[in-house]
Length: 176
Image (cartoon, rainbow, N blue to C red; front, side, top):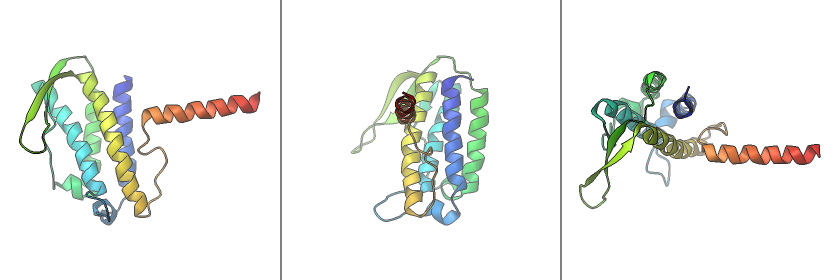
């Protein structure tokens, strides 16, 4: 399996792990000093995956599509179903470096979407980085509600590599 596909599947597995730790009240809670719930972050991540999945046939990925207020945002079981659909899609994904365009809203004070050139590999990389950012925030929301979150959930790939190198360096010192 290609590394970008495998990494995206691993991201979705992290999301599944996090969702499985939540009951409905934790999934939907908006706690002090936060504007979002775990469910809203999960829905937002899955919106991006669906945009890439749906955009493949059109050769345009429209990141403006959002399914705000949907069952995925409020019902953990619905997000788990969506995650499985996305994993199945990724297992069949052709990672050819096909050219496509990306559409995304870019201004806060008025409506303006930019359309930019991209390709499949670039968008798969974007999904990883974007998702990890939101998973980390959702994991923090869970911790603030008393959940015990495994350390690997929300950990960026470059941070994991850095921590491995620290452990390896420490092991080399110990063996010397």
